[in-house]
Length: 187
Image (cartoon, rainbow, N blue to C red; front, side):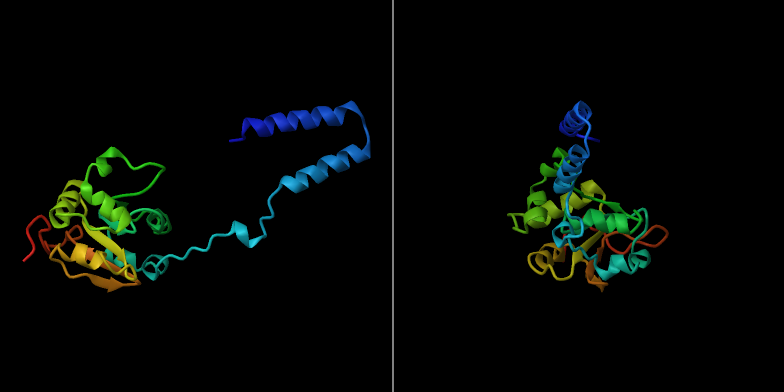
């Protein structure tokens, strides 16, 4: 979508060029356009981003199914890129499109998932969030460390390390028998 200010500038430029004919006017107009165009070859316009090997190499296909609803840590940011680069082969339990919906922010654990600061009663709050959102798997960046090990350790599931990520499988992939019930208290 073209901003209206750009449309107004184009009309003003067209009028200015039409009042008097001359190559110097066209030269000035082209020079002005050149100065407002970004230098896309400059490194400032490139943001380096690298997906974890689990996503980049396609290893997620062996671990996740298109019916899986995956909670990722980080809970917003690169997780949407991971899903897109995985050809949307799994569902996200959270994403960011400019504002978090009330259906997420009403859960106290949501602030923990965004900030990494554990809240009182985080074990029960995490289980409630996972149950209510239908989360079947949790993917955590393996380098994330604390408090994620402590938080997801309360689920009573041993994580599987794969491709720079930790996978906490909470419900079996479709067609397999149950691995663990994630709505029970950990031992």
